[in-house]
Length: 285
Length: 285
Image (cartoon, rainbow over all chains, first blue to last red; front, side, top):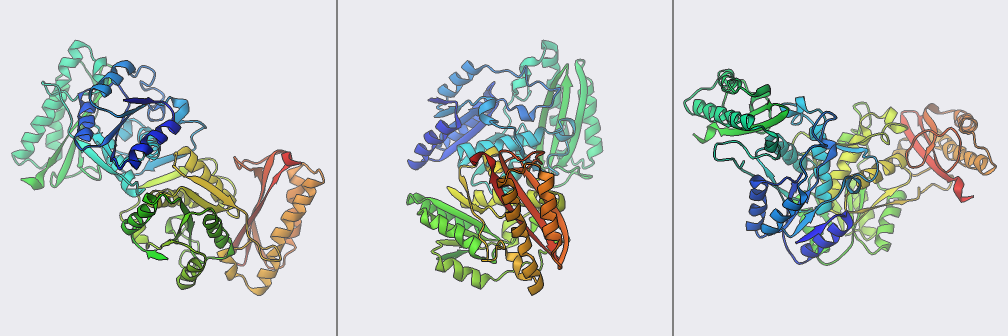
């Protein structure tokens, strides 16, 4: 496994694989790798890709009051995980390598960036879209893998890739969960034992919502109220950013549950912000 | 010479050339080709490139009151010019091919897009940067050629390519002029004989400005006043959008002429808006 820090070396190394007719698979991460990331790496490996993983805690997607400084950076462990899972190249640029000059160019994905997390993290998806555009141009992958856990990020990247005609395929992989249902996240390590226990209410509420829809409920307000009731019962909950039921593609609120909808939740336990979601396709029934 | 209308066919055709180890040269145009465009095509050809020319009148870079509808589209003549100058592929997508869905993703280049033409054509450089990002991803050229005549466009594209790490080189080519100095432009054909004659004042004023700087003048106000005097003497002048002396890289106003400066002018004759510019490198003296 090759560990590369500069854009220039990365390009040379990946183009050699490209010239050898390998499909380039790309898993962009901020490190602190867990089984969610591993599932993306394994998916790429199964596909026979030349697997490139980037580890870069991108400053431009953090707000001024967010956790950029304390975001976990267990690089040695991350590299071991990559090595163990057959990654070909790990790209670990520093911020100066990725942003050499003052960044003046920004990629904005209108509408899709605005609801849900967009309302609580202004500029976040602009930072995500911009760094992904940069990474796509640096790695030039044939396929890029993202987790469904960050559903809005996935929607933003898919739309950006389509709108800007990036010559690659975006593949989404299912959320990986703990046995008690909590979605894996690099931020779970911030949780106290009590918060960790309480945080399972998010997934529990999503399952209940799913059952209600299966049972024929179509009014999003009824379902959102039920979710809210389940989550607010958690003792260590600090606040709920949102509980939303939206169209799975446009991320716009729906007034009636029909077609393919996304149920998305963001809630805080202490200062730790957790997100989770579930897609329900009513057309499939 | 291959004429291609769809993104899919273009990708197939260009990747065959890429696999044959050809350097891909790209000249993006809005058609109505003149000797300025031809100089870009020839530059690419001399470089030994597989030459791709795009002809696309991009709606997203025109304002609602601008000349999108009446912009010249002499396609047959354009294709003949391409054929005559050894172009390998002409890409002529229609607007539906380039913008399949509502475009939600926009590339903004802050600061550099704001002064000069940016003040008079809001959204113009956003449209230019976005369509160039799309075309770069469709053609995947190794080199892209732009004319110095559109100096701000060139600065915007260069900065976008650097900031977003596009894997290509942007090469600028000198402005091509009529024998009386008028910069070639697809919009010159709108001019009446009187306007056409008067329009030479723009280049004349730039030459005078250049002489003044050569003679040691360093106050931009003195030089701008002289340029204004020369241009306002033209009978058929309607208005001057701007006469600016700016830093050649940042496009910010300079208070003293030193280093590399860009003298840029936009003026209207009837409803026809003409632009021209001159770069003066004081360090070279």
